[in-house]
Amino acid sequence: MSGILNIKLENILDLTKEELGGLLLKEGGKKFNANQIFNWLYKKKAVSFTEMSNLSAGMRAATEKLFEIKYLTSGKILTSAKGDAVKFLFKLGDGHKIESVLMLQPYGNTFCASTQVGCAYGCHMCATGKMGLKRNLSPGEITGQLLAAEKEQGEKVNNIVFMGMGEPLANYDNFKKAVLIFSDPDGININQRRQTVSTCGVVPGIDRLISDGLRVNLSVSLHSTFDSLRDKLVPVNKKYKVAVLLKKLQEYCKVTRSHVSIEYVLIAGVNDGIGEADNLIKMINKFCLNTKVNLIPVNPVDALSPSGEETIKMWQKKLENAKIISTSRRERGADILAACGQLAGEE
Ligand code: SAH
Ligand code: SF4
Image (tube, rainbow, N blue to C red; front, side, top):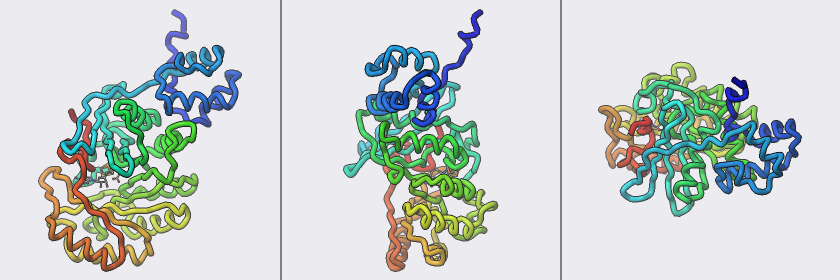
């Protein structure tokens, strides 16, 4: 049997424009062919090379020989009761399932992308963590979530948050490619400053963001400023302690001039006392962090319950008195399990 039948075509959605351009040059193409193809894929949502009418016949044949356009297949799509959040379940080629959420807001839509199937970091309150890590997502599986969602809903996304399933900085190379593909002016064209990566505190990953010159916003899932408690809630803390993480956040802010923020999940009777609030303020001041704090009442997973209104108000007041900006809202989409920490790839 001819060997050619066994050649596995590369998913073109896994490539940055730079990489695609390099491969096309080898086929006798020109650099601008990569721009044209990006336009077709990401702006016009083409699903076949035959649609790409401004490519020469030779170029089209070459691309068809090398690549396939592997769209994600969406399974269940759930819309929240208020209509402000849509959760997508995607089935991957190998049967794994991932989830993403489109949040519809009057001031622009935000897309929450997954970067891994499951997660190895095992944070105490997180449904994704309970699955363990199954595998990393490829760049095209990360960007493909947004492509499919935009195509399906006819909506344009304005902001991206890497806050779905998985730890983006533990899948650094693929995550970085996804950022570059998303921000490409010939493609989705969402500036890096409109992309936010959330990490549980993988300090070497933050170093790589800095040394690679990325300019995405950085959000750290802190949840406690006491090492003894954070060791339990966010086990990566055993390796990178609170002070080390906050120092790195300070460096990131200084070098990249991007926004940094802190996510603080409030769990009743666990990390929501006055002492915790005071220490958070002390640490933010100690590291001179110009940061916003997002207070998130924990979404019920296992037996954990969210802090009450009074407690949340106390936190807000304290932060306000310390001149630290905070946000606190019940998260959209909790009724369809589309909120943070509730994504577990279940139907
Ligand atoms: N792995 C990264 C990106 C995932 S973002 C990170 O941890 O930052 C998911 C966010 O939801 C994180 O801030 C996480 O701490 C938070 N989260 C996890 N479980 C949650 C829960 N039960 N309720 C509310 N937020 C939760
Ligand atoms: Fe992983 Fe983030 Fe969940 Fe922790 S909170 S288990 S790092 S996805």
